[in-house]
Length: 568
Ligand code: FES
Figure (cartoon, helix red, strand yellow):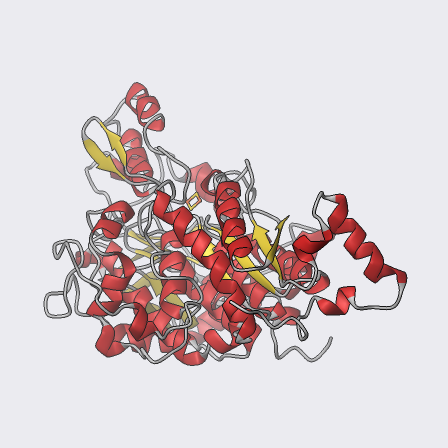
């Protein structure tokens, strides 16, 4: 391909009469490149979240090498650079606290350097949205390639998925149904390869949604991490980024309101993670695209849930790939999508999915025979969540979707851990477990504490689910009748702060209701008498986070990073 070079962004760095233009060439040559290797060529950044502390992304250096091959083949000059990496298992108190920080790293690393285009390499839960938030703000041509799902786990002949089945078997351990020895053996089997969690958790959800939005190439969602086809996908992306530069195809031209709607439809059709709502809102906020929470619910009502994958179904991401992958799912819901939208392939979404075949109808249902006629996520509101809360009905007990029960309140996560297994805890299976101070400001960082553990004394009776409620988040791999993202959060003065043990709570998912059955006057008076929660951080990044993070119904981004921010 003959590439125009006179209008490249990187020329601003090199075609300067001052010493630095000369020095920048010297710096490239200092890494062993000849002058001809880069002169006049588009410089392609490979923004890599590889880290040994992020096991899901531990193979991304290999993927970067494949991208480089593609860039060289197409006449570009690749430059790999590291950004912050967010490993879900290792980082404390929660990766969500650092998503915005990583997005700033990505944005400024792109903006400050002589790059004409960028390939974004991510995978583990928060790395994908943070990459896209940063790339959206920097807004130079970009293609996202995620690392792909892990291979299926297998324990004693049973196919398992991380970490849905880690959670399931932990419950069995707490209930005394498996031994510590079983549990240790399972630990050696559950993660077989690099790659992200291979159920439809947050990582798989985001990898799918971004493919539907056109910012990631076809195949991105489901090709297993260690399958050679993923390397070939990365190599192709390395070639394709040159074409995007030629066409000035920036993230803002791909991630439009219509493309977000395609993404939300896909989110519902796959029964994706509740976390995707927050991430999509945050990415949209960087682009000036309005995505109200009501839109998610509106599209859920008219999008069938089709994908029989854990945690809402039976299969795993590897199976999904063999069934035809996301292209096959998009083909199934094609009438609901705007297929005229552009994608990073240079073709429309409709052209990308032409000829896609569903090879496994028991895994990927048709619109005529869905897992559920409505989408996988629902927004509930009421006097307990005036601006909304989220539940994943597809992963919940159907018998609990309409439920009234007595509140059992935990002040925060520490209080929960201290009391949940107390043999004297006054708890019944029909109670509603409530935890507060788990939100963006209160925790801070909105950890995945929302999957509240069931009390041991309840587990001992054979019960495996109860209605649970909090202003925290829930891992996309988790399951149960769990209401999360209650907004406003308790630390921001939300009514969750007024709930007392013994109050009655009504959850009515079909009618999208979540109410505290207490007089409004009494709720107001309790809130007035509630002392503010002491901040957990008095300096540094944690302090800044609590000052500037928005509520969950707005995406939890920093107010000053949104495109509509006009100054302090
Ligand atoms: Fe990285 Fe699950 S731990 S995606």
